[in-house]
Image 1 (cartoon, one colour):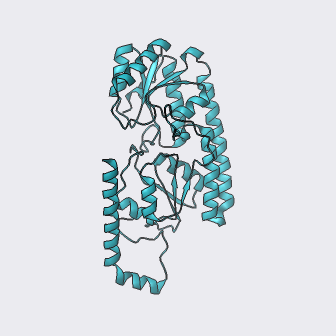
Image 2 (tube, helix red, strand yellow; image 1 turned 120 degrees about the horizontal axis):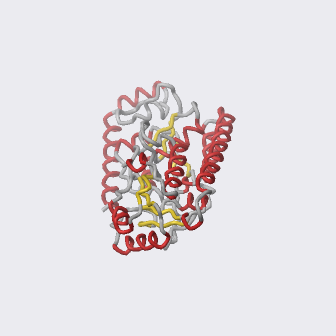
Image 3 (cartoon, rainbow, N blue to C red; image 1 turned 45 degrees about the vertical axis):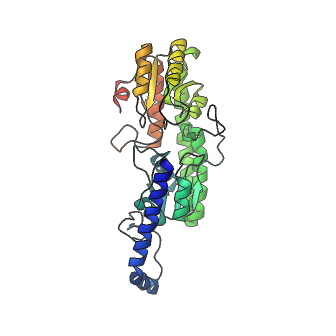
Length: 332
């Protein structure tokens, strides 16, 4: 069903853009006489990326986490936007005609790779815009019971240091005049990521070995768990796209009881109904809501990637120590 809907969406995109092109032939002829428009200029009302009074090159990313990381490297030289909005489900997102129009007004698109965005291959084929895979060079961790890699590599600050290098290189090729600034921004951001990694290690260092178990709805924390020396326990191996089974719930319940886990967690983009069954069956606490695939709104708890990692680290440490943060427990 997802594939059929996605195909329909792209067919609609193609028709819509074709109609716009046919309806603007005279305008295009006038533009040709005045010189070709740059991709950042407004070409359609559906193309907010092209509406760029500052004249900055536009870079699109597939989701909000990448947009924030990219903006830190871009500084003031590029206009960075996310295709998806805060809180969106990024794995099986269905692009709109407006998304395609925005992409065609961009100079570059940043995607994550590793099969994270199942919709992206067809999208970039239709957009015909250069793109860069930000996770290049990251050592993947396989999904349990699968030959595929767990794509949530940004949950390790160490991996995001490689993102910073990849972005600095891509932006320098796009805009050579500011290459030194991109490199400088990347080094500054990498230093901040190093501090975050130390904070993560310090916040979890006090936990006894038998309490270092991270029980979550999705297995999206493999890279963070590896960094922090945590054992994983989850309902879904990577993505809650299918209905949870009784066997999956029973497995997590047994592990929580066996390891005497003090708190379990769920992600902001996942319904925690199944994890509530685990809580009811074991008497453990809800440690709080964690953020992975999306940042929050600007007035939320994680408006930036650095906020996300700090928030998740503290929420996990507080929960596993038996003292969950009430504010994290309230987050939906």
